[in-house]
Image 1 (cartoon, rainbow, N blue to C red):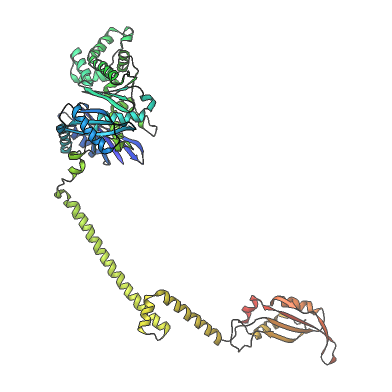
Image 2 (image 1 turned 180 degrees about the vertical axis):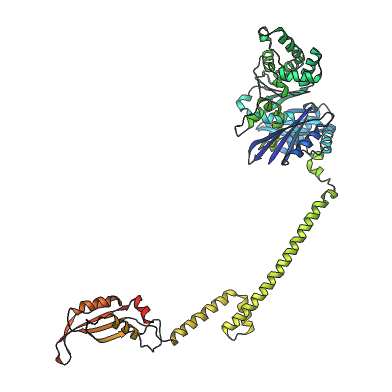
Amino acid sequence: MRIIGVDFGSTSIKAVEIDSAFGRYEVQEYHEQTVVAGEDPAQAVARLLVSLPKAPDRLVVSLKTRQVTFRNLQLPTRDKKAIQSGVGFELEDELPFSMENAAYDYSIISQSKAGTQAHVSATLTKNLAASLDAWTAAGVDPDLVTTEAWAYRTLMNRVLAPEEQNEPILLIQIGNERTTFYVHWRGVPILARDIAWGGSDLTLAICQKYQIPVDQAENAKLDHGFVIPPAQKKEVTAEQIEFSEALATSIEKLLAELRQIELTTKNLTDLSIHQIYTSGGSSMLPGLNQVIEQISKTPVKSLPALSSIATSGVTYSENTDAKFLLAASLALCMVGSDRSLAINFRKGEFAKLGRTRELNMATLRGPLMAVGAIALCFFVSMFAQSSFYNSRITETNAQLEKSVKTFFGSLSNSAVRTYMSNTATLKTQVGKEIKKQRELTQLSTPNPKDPTSFLRDLSNSVPKDIVVDLTQFSLGSAPTASYLTGTDSTASLTFLVGKPEMVEKLSNIMTGKLSGLGKSKVEEVPGPAGEGRRWKITYTGKPTEESFGKWN
């Protein structure tokens, strides 16, 4: 989700884009848009949003600190409804204006057995309505309208460890026309106040001192401006002291307010301010932090906003860190768990959902017509596909019915319909019929294992120098007998040889003809009609696979 926080400045608009997903976030980009003289800042925001390559998913803005008041209330309950009622009851005595004219929101900061601590922010309804009307007129419709104090609180809790917040911390945000003081303590806003003083007052001081135009004074401030801390005045020239004192006179208003903030913080917390952070474009004035530190006797340093929250380790320039602190703080209000805790004035009558319902139907006419055209094309396509597939199914069924009748012969129409409706039954019956036809074929065809073929092959294998007489031969069935799969194919052959050395040669030949070759012992027997002696030997076994091929 892409979130953009917008800081409405008087001379320029600052915006920071944050990409948030699954509790993680990364700073994507920062933008600055100049506010043209006489232009409403909201119009500059609208121009900025239009110029972005991708519109943000969430837009976060804030009301000015001078338009808002807040309280930290301790309520003796943990019940949600009781908390809501208690906040309204407490505000009646706390607010400097009537509850009827107030718009407020609260966030639960912490809960314990003793009860609930809630931070409540309130503003006048007319101020909120006027701001929303100005933003809406410019085409800006924010999702979250919060307070500067809550934005600073969100940033502080992300960049500072809890142990660093045990004592009050002051943030001074110095803008062009106004300066905001924010006091943070133990994760909670304690004080927020702004004064009508900023960088333009420093420019005016130079303009009055040297009687030069405003634009020249602004350039002098940016290029050569500085303020000398009291302890270092002995180390500089008289001209440098003169230029510094021109700015120091203007800074006195800032320092006077700082003393007041210190006293108020001491009264609220019984603790002194432990650390001061400065931010804003005018806070970059050389020597300003040192002056504040020597006057307040408190450590002072700039707060690097973007560099502190950049999870990728990117380091931004000091000027960028100073100028985009509020915009970054606002964007962080919609990241992770802070999203559900944020103070948001866009509720009730000011809720964004309520305003989006007031849509002009003429605006939606184009998108609705496009959706209707797409839907029509979809249904026409579905109808055409359905007609085509139904036609193909009808043709296929007709071919299948014809094939079934041809295969099975005479079948009744009811039997055909049964087979057509149950393909599993049809498949089974076809398998049975094929098996039956195979068995009939085997019974009616001659024996492929013809014994005479075996003898012919054997006769061709016996060389002429081996003289033998085949006295007994048994193999399978007769050539004209029906072939049965289970017929015994064992062969038995008995030979008579005239010389005993011929037995070994004959055995070598039979080894290639019969597998599992078995033979009886060689017996000496009388020859026919008393003519010499003969030797009888019997071979048994099954014809080899090689011999099977030669029979066919």
